[in-house]
Image 1: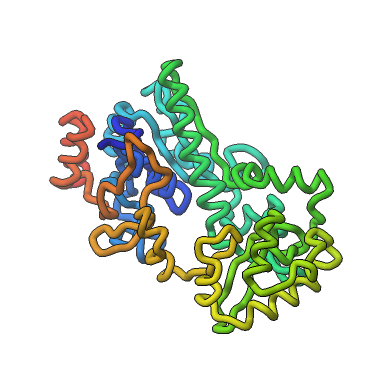
Image 2: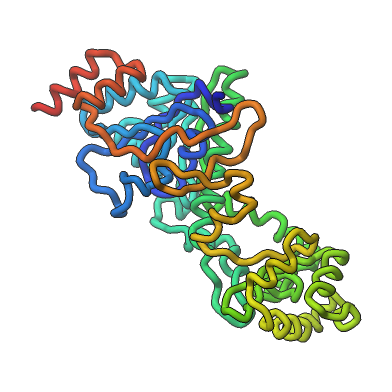
Length: 384
C-alpha cells in the first residue's frame, strides 16, 4: 500500500527541529523527499545524521555545495522536478544563495515553497535569533503553563518547534499542493512558530474573553487550578493524571477513590478548589500509581497513570494500535494520523548524507532526473 502523498516530490534544505519534523511527516505519508546538506558541514548536535536522528528517517540525504555554481545548477535541476521545497533558514539566507522564491518559482512555477522560521518572514523580529522557549514567551503561552505561585514551566520543545512550527509547515505545504493541482501555480508558505502557537491558543483566547480564564497561572480549569484536572503524587512517588471534567466522570472518579460526592459537591466553585485538592491529594497518596491505574482501568473516569519514556511504548493500548514501531533496533513513534486505504509507513532509518559528487550521490541525483552534464559538473567541481 502506498501513502496518501505517494508521487509527491519534495526537496528539503536541511535545518533543525521543525523543518525536519515537517519533512518526516510528509515522508511518512509517502512523499519522496531528498535531504540537501551543506557540503562539509558538521552537525549542530552530536546525534544528528545517525541512527537516533529520528526526524531524518525515511529519506535519503546528499551533501551539495550550494555556494558553488555547479552545486546551484544541480539544485535547480532537483527543484525543477519537485512539487515542493522546504527550508528553515533565517529570512534572506536562501536569497543570498541565489535560491530565493522569486528565482526558484521562475524556474518551476508550480513549486510550493515552504519557509519555516520562528518569527516569520516579515516583522521587526524576523531576522532575530530565537528558540522554542522565546517563541512561547512572546505569544502568552509560556506564561500560562505551570503551577500557581511557581515559574512558567517549559513544555519541552513540543509546542512551538513541533506543534506551532513543524506541523503547521506540513499542513501549509499540503494545502498549497492541493491548491496547485487546480491552479497550476505554486506559492510561498510562510510558516512561523509564533503564528502557529497563536493559532493553537485560539480556545484559550476565547475563554479569557468570555471570563472563563483568570490569567493567573495554575488557577484555571485546564492548567492545574481545578482539583479535578491535574496530577497527583502517589504512595510510590509516581504520578496519576485526573481529567474528570464532566459531572458523570467526576462522580465516578470520586466513587472509585472511596470519596463521598457530598464532600465535593460544588465542583466548579473556584473558592473550594484548593480545599478539595488537598483532600484528593491525601487520598491519592494512600496507594501506588499502579494500584490506582488498576482501579480506574477501563472506566469512564478520565484517570490515567503518568508514564515515563520507557513505559509508554510498552503500554497495552499502544501495543494494540502499534503506536510505536522498531526500525533497525530503534524504538520510535509510528506515522500519524492513520489512513484506512493508503496508510503511511516509516520507509527506512535515518540516513547519513552522501557526497553529491560521489557514486552514491550521483546515483541519487540520476534517480531524481538530474541531467548527466550537471552531475559531471559537480564531479569536476569536487576535483578542482
